[in-house]
Length: 87
Image (cartoon, rainbow, N blue to C red; front, side, top):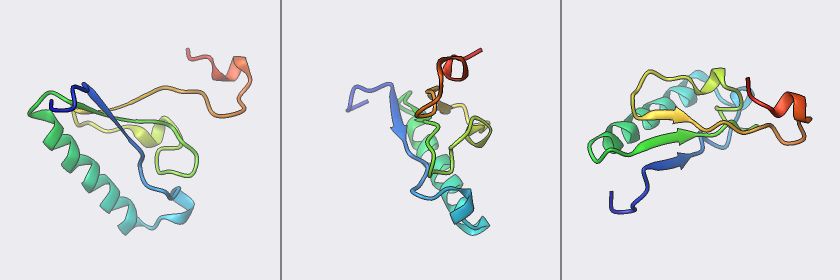
């Protein structure tokens, strides 16, 4: 953990699903799994945010079974309090 960070935030591309074909999505997923594998050994987690304009714009798009991959919760920009509050 040379950086001293237990979690590294990663953006899932600069394209959303409308601008990404299956090959592009597969490349992003492969890269995410590769960096998660690298991060596992020193005990670092990789966290994705929900960001419009990326492949992880919603909770459903951030789901993965790799133990080093997770998500950060955050409200969508402009969401009202009732919508932004989790659970």
